[in-house]
Image (cartoon, rainbow, N blue to C red; front, side):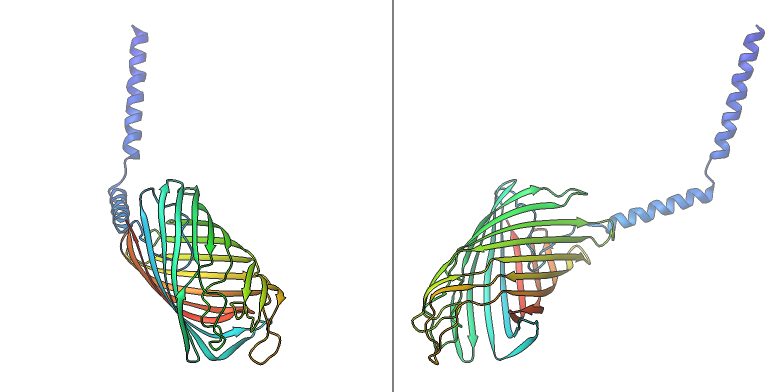
Length: 344
């Protein structure tokens, strides 16, 4: 009996001490109000967050594979003034006669499977310089994209693209009186391999998500047989083979969401083209001298800032300016660019 009394006393003491500890740990009124304010702040911030809609950037391609059965069309209009050229040392020299180019282009994507898509580009080119002009189609790239990685919270999207450019643009038998403005193609089949990656980032600015893209590309052109005045130079009687240089491109794309519909975009682009050589009879230029065919390597750095307006996740507009900031053995240009994208 005595043991039972002691046991009950211990249980009663433990409950009393536990209840007292519970009373001591209860939050104060000020703490409860602070917690409510924090919860309301988090709720209001969550209401202001959104899934961003993007059209751009202007140039860097997407690393996301289009879902099967869907089609994406993105028409572009490039209005370009080629106002100068960079020398081998990087000095920019202005041209006495600017070369103006109007280039409408349509990029198309077709989803085939969850990991594969088809792509194509159709374009026309209008050139005007020193009172001469021409209009024709440009070369036709067709390819496939293969999704390697799907984007996850801490994993970027990764896509491998393989394209073949078909030389349907005009590249030889040019009019000697037009100074080359009637050239709209390369004459070469070009195999282009690209690796594209992208990542949407929320945690830096939760109310203003950002999208990053990086595209690396390498192009391998075939040998081109040329006659007469051509894209690579030439003159009267030119007959031989041009060996175009291989190409490397790097495009870093960035998008910053102001709201779900409005965004700022920027491309930073680097392009390199290897030396182009010629074998055969070079022909004569208009002055009777031996014509020049081919040329040295070239490289170029350009920027393309833009503003986006997106009606919804599948339809948006983008407009901006693309311009060179440095180069060697390449053109200096400024281009106004307008585009919209539509997925259906």
